[in-house]
Image (tube, rainbow, N blue to C red; front, top):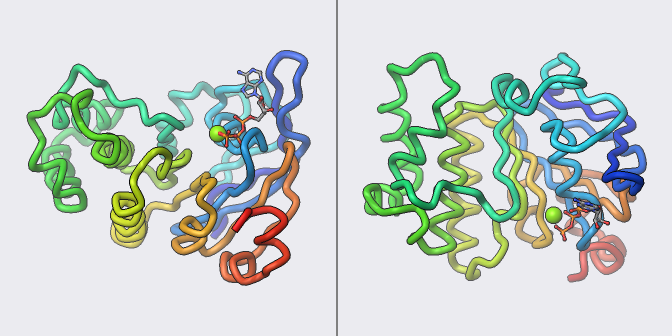
Length: 236
Ligand SMILES: Nc1ncnc2c1ncn2[C@@H]1O[C@H](COP(=O)(O)OP(=O)(O)OP(=O)(O)O)[C@@H](O)[C@H]1O
Ligand SMILES: [Mg+2]
């Protein structure tokens, strides 16, 4: 079933049009990668889904249009956004950050259990549960940002450049966890990445975006194995 359907999406920063009418769909429980160079419009796409930037066109989540509703309402419908640069509360501990992640949830009884589940997915967070988020390493902060987003029990998680600034080994770890989380928590993931090779390993589907337009789409396998696409758009 289609979980997210985007049709003719245009986005604007003042007079500047950053998205030129893009369309794509994401199936329930799947991982989709949104690839492209700097400035292509990847972050803007995620921000438009969350209604954080002025946009036109149609975005439907689980059959419901998202137009005109607040960012908080988008979150409440089950879309968690891990922005570029992460954004955890640096003066709070790991555990406090996880608790805050669940703040808009009504089923408060299961929050403790969910925190334990996050510690199973991310053992490093358990070891550091009393540490201030601001003092975590980059990789640990990214793990915390993802775990905090999952505390919402979202049906869709939007991840903006999760690999950014992390050492290759940490990135491997993180992506292995993301794959496990996708399967076990049954959460769909829309992941924006400049590290196309890596994103294509966990995604089933991929879209390549260039100056605000989608220029290529297909199964992750097709995109990863097509040498022309790789050389022209993905730079590896
Ligand atoms: N706040 C803003 N005001 C004006 N223009 C913006 C703003 N944010 C982004 N843009 C422009 O919109 C376009 C798309 O930017 P966006 O951040 O979506 O790209 P991106 O694909 O995420 O790039 P990167 O890989 O560098 O993160 C760029 O041309 C950018 O300069
Ligand atoms: Mg970006």
